[in-house]
Length: 188
Image: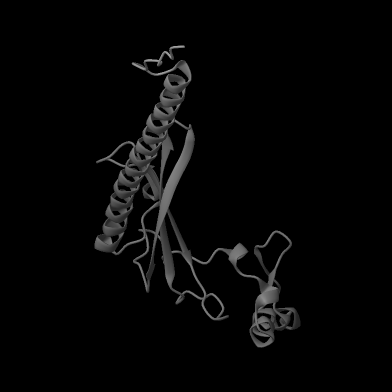
Protein backbone atom coordinates (compact mmCIF):
# COMPACT_ATOMS: atom_id res chain seq x y z
CA UNK A 1 0.00 0.00 0.00
CA UNK A 2 1.23 3.30 -0.92
CA UNK A 3 1.00 6.24 1.43
CA UNK A 4 0.14 9.50 -0.11
CA UNK A 5 1.81 12.39 1.51
CA UNK A 6 -0.41 15.45 1.81
CA UNK A 7 1.01 18.44 0.16
CA UNK A 8 0.61 21.54 2.20
CA UNK A 9 1.00 24.51 -0.06
CA UNK A 10 -1.22 27.02 1.78
CA UNK A 11 -2.86 27.98 5.05
CA UNK A 12 -6.01 26.44 6.40
CA UNK A 13 -9.10 28.56 6.85
CA UNK A 14 -8.71 28.55 10.65
CA UNK A 15 -5.14 29.80 10.41
CA UNK A 16 -6.22 32.64 8.14
CA UNK A 17 -9.12 33.65 10.43
CA UNK A 18 -6.92 33.60 13.55
CA UNK A 19 -4.18 35.65 11.88
CA UNK A 20 -6.73 38.23 10.62
CA UNK A 21 -8.23 38.49 14.11
CA UNK A 22 -4.80 39.04 15.68
CA UNK A 23 -3.93 41.64 13.05
CA UNK A 24 -7.27 43.44 13.58
CA UNK A 25 -6.72 43.49 17.36
CA UNK A 26 -3.21 44.93 16.97
CA UNK A 27 -4.32 47.59 14.47
CA UNK A 28 -7.31 48.60 16.62
CA UNK A 29 -5.14 48.86 19.75
CA UNK A 30 -2.60 50.95 17.88
CA UNK A 31 -5.29 53.26 16.51
CA UNK A 32 -6.89 53.74 19.96
CA UNK A 33 -3.49 54.54 21.50
CA UNK A 34 -2.77 57.02 18.70
CA UNK A 35 -6.17 58.70 19.12
CA UNK A 36 -5.71 59.06 22.90
CA UNK A 37 -2.26 60.57 22.38
CA UNK A 38 -3.65 63.10 19.89
CA UNK A 39 -6.47 64.00 22.33
CA UNK A 40 -3.98 64.54 25.17
CA UNK A 41 -1.79 66.73 22.96
CA UNK A 42 -4.85 68.75 21.90
CA UNK A 43 -5.99 69.19 25.51
CA UNK A 44 -2.49 70.28 26.55
CA UNK A 45 -2.40 72.84 23.74
CA UNK A 46 -5.81 74.21 24.80
CA UNK A 47 -4.64 74.48 28.42
CA UNK A 48 -1.48 76.32 27.34
CA UNK A 49 -3.53 78.77 25.27
CA UNK A 50 -5.95 79.27 28.19
CA UNK A 51 -3.03 79.86 30.55
CA UNK A 52 -1.67 82.55 28.24
CA UNK A 53 -5.12 84.25 28.31
CA UNK A 54 -5.13 84.13 32.13
CA UNK A 55 -1.56 85.44 32.31
CA UNK A 56 -2.41 88.28 29.91
CA UNK A 57 -5.38 89.35 32.07
CA UNK A 58 -3.30 89.11 35.26
CA UNK A 59 -0.49 91.16 33.67
CA UNK A 60 -3.01 93.86 32.72
CA UNK A 61 -4.12 93.98 36.37
CA UNK A 62 -0.48 94.13 37.54
CA UNK A 63 0.39 96.87 35.05
CA UNK A 64 -2.59 99.03 35.97
CA UNK A 65 -2.28 98.45 39.71
CA UNK A 66 -5.92 99.43 39.89
CA UNK A 67 -9.09 97.56 40.69
CA UNK A 68 -10.99 97.10 37.42
CA UNK A 69 -14.54 98.38 37.15
CA UNK A 70 -17.35 95.85 36.93
CA UNK A 71 -17.25 95.90 33.11
CA UNK A 72 -13.64 94.71 33.13
CA UNK A 73 -14.31 91.67 35.33
CA UNK A 74 -15.19 89.22 32.52
CA UNK A 75 -15.26 88.88 28.76
CA UNK A 76 -14.11 87.10 25.64
CA UNK A 77 -10.37 87.28 25.03
CA UNK A 78 -9.51 89.72 22.26
CA UNK A 79 -6.46 87.80 21.03
CA UNK A 80 -8.01 84.33 21.24
CA UNK A 81 -11.84 84.54 21.07
CA UNK A 82 -12.19 80.78 21.68
CA UNK A 83 -11.74 81.54 25.41
CA UNK A 84 -13.87 83.44 27.90
CA UNK A 85 -12.43 84.73 31.16
CA UNK A 86 -13.73 85.94 34.52
CA UNK A 87 -11.91 87.84 37.27
CA UNK A 88 -12.79 87.51 40.94
CA UNK A 89 -11.31 89.93 43.47
CA UNK A 90 -11.84 89.46 47.20
CA UNK A 91 -10.14 90.10 50.48
CA UNK A 92 -8.56 87.03 52.09
CA UNK A 93 -7.80 86.26 55.70
CA UNK A 94 -4.94 84.09 56.90
CA UNK A 95 -4.37 82.35 60.20
CA UNK A 96 -7.66 83.36 61.80
CA UNK A 97 -6.96 87.10 61.48
CA UNK A 98 -10.24 88.92 60.81
CA UNK A 99 -10.84 90.61 57.49
CA UNK A 100 -9.83 94.26 57.37
CA UNK A 101 -9.19 96.75 54.60
CA UNK A 102 -5.50 95.88 55.04
CA UNK A 103 -6.12 92.19 54.28
CA UNK A 104 -4.49 90.98 51.06
CA UNK A 105 -6.51 90.93 47.86
CA UNK A 106 -6.85 87.56 46.14
CA UNK A 107 -7.21 87.90 42.37
CA UNK A 108 -8.43 84.78 40.56
CA UNK A 109 -8.67 84.64 36.78
CA UNK A 110 -10.80 81.75 35.49
CA UNK A 111 -10.53 80.92 31.79
CA UNK A 112 -13.07 78.58 30.20
CA UNK A 113 -13.65 77.07 26.80
CA UNK A 114 -16.24 74.70 25.41
CA UNK A 115 -15.13 71.28 24.27
CA UNK A 116 -16.66 70.98 20.84
CA UNK A 117 -16.64 67.18 20.78
CA UNK A 118 -17.95 66.65 24.30
CA UNK A 119 -20.11 69.82 24.60
CA UNK A 120 -18.80 70.45 28.08
CA UNK A 121 -16.88 73.33 29.59
CA UNK A 122 -13.27 73.03 30.57
CA UNK A 123 -11.19 75.63 32.31
CA UNK A 124 -8.21 76.71 34.37
CA UNK A 125 -7.66 79.15 37.23
CA UNK A 126 -4.73 81.47 37.91
CA UNK A 127 -4.46 83.14 41.34
CA UNK A 128 -2.27 85.94 42.66
CA UNK A 129 -2.30 87.94 45.88
CA UNK A 130 -1.91 91.72 46.04
CA UNK A 131 -1.09 93.84 49.06
CA UNK A 132 -3.12 96.70 47.62
CA UNK A 133 -4.81 97.99 44.48
CA UNK A 134 -5.92 101.52 43.68
CA UNK A 135 -9.71 101.86 43.91
CA UNK A 136 -11.89 102.53 40.88
CA UNK A 137 -12.78 106.12 40.28
CA UNK A 138 -15.48 107.27 42.68
CA UNK A 139 -14.59 104.70 45.38
CA UNK A 140 -12.59 105.18 48.53
CA UNK A 141 -11.55 101.53 48.90
CA UNK A 142 -10.37 98.90 46.43
CA UNK A 143 -12.10 95.53 46.82
CA UNK A 144 -14.31 96.37 49.77
CA UNK A 145 -15.09 93.66 52.28
CA UNK A 146 -18.36 91.99 51.41
CA UNK A 147 -20.60 91.81 54.48
CA UNK A 148 -21.43 88.16 53.81
CA UNK A 149 -17.71 87.37 54.05
CA UNK A 150 -17.62 88.26 57.77
CA UNK A 151 -18.66 85.34 59.94
CA UNK A 152 -19.31 86.87 63.36
CA UNK A 153 -19.34 83.45 65.03
CA UNK A 154 -15.86 82.67 63.71
CA UNK A 155 -14.38 85.89 65.13
CA UNK A 156 -12.52 85.79 68.42
CA UNK A 157 -14.62 86.92 71.40
CA UNK A 158 -12.73 90.19 71.93
CA UNK A 159 -13.21 91.30 68.31
CA UNK A 160 -16.86 90.27 68.29
CA UNK A 161 -17.36 92.25 71.52
CA UNK A 162 -15.59 95.26 69.97
CA UNK A 163 -17.88 95.19 66.91
CA UNK A 164 -20.97 94.81 69.06
CA UNK A 165 -19.80 97.72 71.25
CA UNK A 166 -19.34 99.76 68.07
CA UNK A 167 -22.96 99.04 67.21
CA UNK A 168 -22.33 96.57 64.41
CA UNK A 169 -24.19 93.27 64.31
CA UNK A 170 -24.74 90.83 61.45
CA UNK A 171 -28.35 90.50 60.34
CA UNK A 172 -29.99 87.25 59.20
CA UNK A 173 -29.23 88.14 55.56
CA UNK A 174 -25.49 88.33 56.34
CA UNK A 175 -25.34 92.12 56.02
CA UNK A 176 -24.21 94.39 58.84
CA UNK A 177 -26.88 96.02 60.95
CA UNK A 178 -25.83 99.19 62.75
CA UNK A 179 -27.44 99.39 66.16
CA UNK A 180 -28.20 102.77 67.69
CA UNK A 181 -25.48 103.94 70.05
CA UNK A 182 -26.39 103.95 73.78
CA UNK A 183 -24.77 107.41 74.10
CA UNK A 184 -27.20 108.82 71.51
CA UNK A 185 -30.17 107.37 73.36
CA UNK A 186 -29.01 108.99 76.64
CA UNK A 187 -28.55 112.44 75.04
CA UNK A 188 -32.21 112.80 74.04
